[in-house]
Structures are given as structure tokens and as C-alpha cells.
Amino acid sequence: MKDVSISAASLAAQAMGWVDPVTKAVVPPIHMSSTYQRDTDNNYSSGRIYARADNPTFDQVEATLAALEGGSKALVFSSGMSAACACFLAWSPGDHIIVPKVMYWSLRNWLATFATHWGLKIDFVDADRTDAIAAAVRPGATKLIWLETPANPTWSISDIAAVAEIAHKAGALLAIDSTVATPVLTRPIELGADIVMHSATKYLNGHSDIIAGALIGARDDAHWAKLRAIRAQLGTILGQTEAWLLMRGIRTLFPRVQWACRSAQSLAERFAGHPMVAAVLYPGLASFPGHTIAARQMRGGFGGMLSIRVKGGERAAIATAARVDLWKRATSLGGVESLIEHRASVEGPGTPCPPDLLRLSVGVEDSSDLFNDLDQALRRAHNA
Ligand SMILES: *Cc1c(COP(=O)(O)O)cnc(C)c1O
Image 1 (cartoon, rainbow, N blue to C red):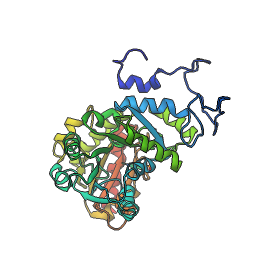
Image 2: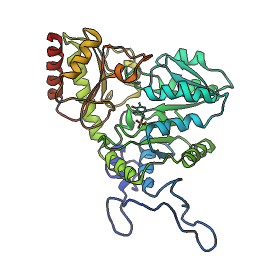
Image 3: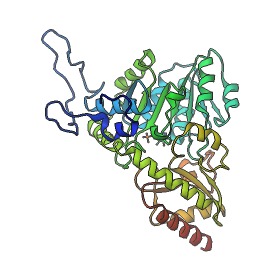
């Protein structure tokens, strides 16, 4: 599109305004080829050699993600985990990295086991406290600070701009798992982050029908080339059909996220006074500890994820999840259908997740239907 002032919402809806130059199709084709012909002068004038490095089906979705995040380049991966792991594999044994105590459970597990055994020196800190991050920095040794905000499953908030300053003063990079915020609500690169990671399985795709990941880089530099090489070497590329589905999903990202934010805010406020609910964890509540920072770095809403802590403990929480009808009992988040999960059961021993916590991913159903369904489940579980 020629008009550079066009909004991110319009760019997403039209997938950058792409129209096929030959057929005038407004939806792109899927490129199936795994290999590309070499020219007679022994060069590859197309710039493409083999599809373990990239695929033309990635071009539109990667350009759209870079534009939505205000970054320079994007890479799509076979999963959110493979995108995240690439950010850590880019460093060497002995390098120091700071990560949150409260974060996506599978990545935390991988960091505590594989990445640590491989030789990375990893500190797990209270990432909702900027002073705790500053205290953990080892100037000269710290290479990367990793944040997730809002963070699974308590939705605690980290101050991206403040931590970017700390990271850069120490010569380290800042990477943000922005899966829950999405580029609709937060653009971490504008706040000083160097890399943004997404589980594109979640809001970006939005329909619970692919596994995908993405990285967006502030700069197309030597470090970015390393991340690109890791994807090509490990072959953790996205399948071409999944890349096409991801682009299709991103076109409705803004209305889906905006709807989910309004419903989540309403549900958080209604459950905050509920007789069977001990606490509601949601950055949009003024009483939430990270609310002031969230209000500064999230625009237009506080996300579609919230958790409730059920009175009566773990048994009451599991009994409540068993009695919903409209909400679906399933892991994952960010789809059009609302999901409920007893998170401690999934994370297992050693989890920092409270046992009475139910994680709610708010979809695009009517929010009163969602309230009524969970309300009756809480009451029936209480009386059981
Ligand atoms: C789901 C998720 C991941 C992992 O992504 P996959 O696509 O499942 O590999 C990482 N971070 C967050 C916040 C997630 O919700």
C-alpha cells in the first residue's frame, strides 16, 4: 500500500493490500515446491534454493507481522516453542540469561533442563519487579533478558520500557513473549525491545487449528541472521499450508482481540464480586498490582486472558471446570471459542500456579452467555 499512515488494523485486514500481479487474486496461492531451479550461470536469481530455509508462502505473513509489530523483519516457525528456543540457542554455553519465574510452563521447563544442561547460565527472577531484574544483571556476562507480559497464568506485568533500558545499559538484548498482548495491544519494539516472540497458535491465528510461532526483529542485523540460520539448520519452519492459514487468521486479529478484551474486562468486573470467587487476576482491574504499568504499555484493552481463584480450593476449582457447558475444558488460548483450564493440573509438581486457579481464555461468544455458564458452574460446584 502506498499510504504509509494507514493503520495496523487496516494492514492486517487486507494482509498488506497484497494482490497477485498475474492473476489479480486477492488471496495468495500456497507454494508447495521444496526446491528451486538453479540458473544456467550457476546462480539462484530468485534468491531461493531449498524450502528448509524459507518458502514464498511466508513472504506475505512475515511482512505483515513485521509491519504490525513495527519491526524490521519477521520469521515464522513450526511452533511458538521452536521460535522461543531459537532465541536461546543463539547464545553460547557460559552466557548469562535472565528469565521470569512466572512464564509459559513448557518453556520454563526447557530452560531449567535442556538449556541449563547445555551450559546457559539462567536466572529465574520476579519479572514483575524491575529492581529484581536490575539486581540479577551481570554486566558483560548477561546477553539476554526474556520477559512475558502479561505472564501465564497470573497475568503479572513487566515494565518493558524500564527493562529495555537496563538490558541495553548492560549490553544485553531484550526479548518479549508477546503472545497474550498481541500487536493489537502492545508493540514491544516501540518500547525498546529487540525481539518479539509469538505463539502464533494463539491469537494471531485465532482458530485453534494450527501450531505456529513467530519472531519479529527490531533490526535486520548479524543477530537476526543467526536466528534465521537456526531456523534453516534445525528445519523448524512452518508448513506452507499452516503459513497460509496463519495469514488468513491474522486478517481478523483486530476485531477478535478487541471483542475478547471487552468481554474479559466485563467478566473480570462481574466475577470480582462473586460469592464463590476468592480473587480475579486481570490487568484491567484497578486493584491488580501491575495495572498502572499495563495501562501505560497496553492500548485499547488488557487482553482476553484472566484467571479466577475459586473459594474452596483445588477441589472446588476442578468441580467448577467439570460443570461448565459453553466454556470448553482445554489447554491453549486465543481462539474464537472460550476455554477454561485448571492450570496446576497441567503444569504438575513444582508449579508456582495456585491450586485454586482456573485460567480463562475469552473467545468471541456473547459475554453474558459466558458469565451465566461459569456462574451456574461455580454455584453447582459449591453446592455439590
Ligand atoms: C502457547 C504458548 C507458547 C508456546 O507456543 P506453541 O505454539 O504451543 O509452541 C509460548 N508462550 C506462550 C505465552 C504461550 O501461550
